[in-house]
Length: 157
Image 1 (cartoon, rainbow, N blue to C red):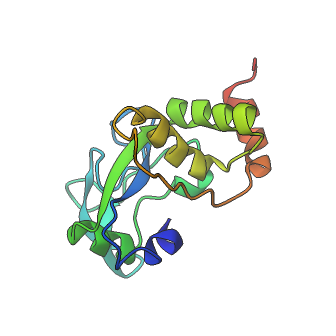
Image 2 (cartoon, rainbow, N blue to C red):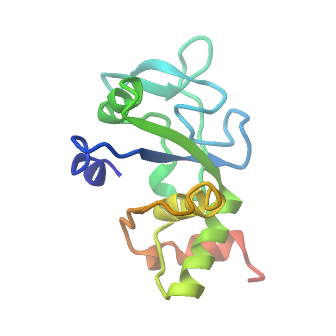
Image 3 (spheres, rainbow, N blue to C red):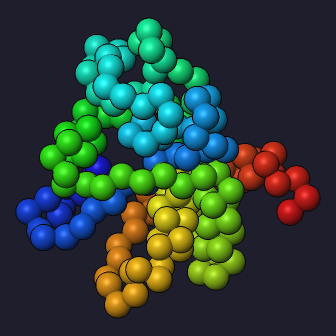
């Protein structure tokens, strides 16, 4: 999302980043570094940023159906954009992302990466409040790489 955001920094538009809400808000069940339980400021790999950690500063395990979102920290650029209020961050659960993956695949013939499916899920969930607004969603990758993950999570589908 950061590459898409950069094109709009100077424009008076709302930008929303969507984190991996995983299975639940419990530690180890999500990768929502801004919103989830255990989220806070800490240091990981020499970078002070928002990450999932316990009271002693130990990095917590994460979970997301999307391998690309399954990481305990956010990059410093996202941290700055959040702190400045330029980007609003929210989270989408695994089941919502999987449903959005199928929705976009079936209705538009576009197989989104599971990372992008999180953004599609948020737009779908918020569609009533977005009526009449122009919405741009970044589809950042190919979903065919994620078909094995979908098969493992939805063996009967």
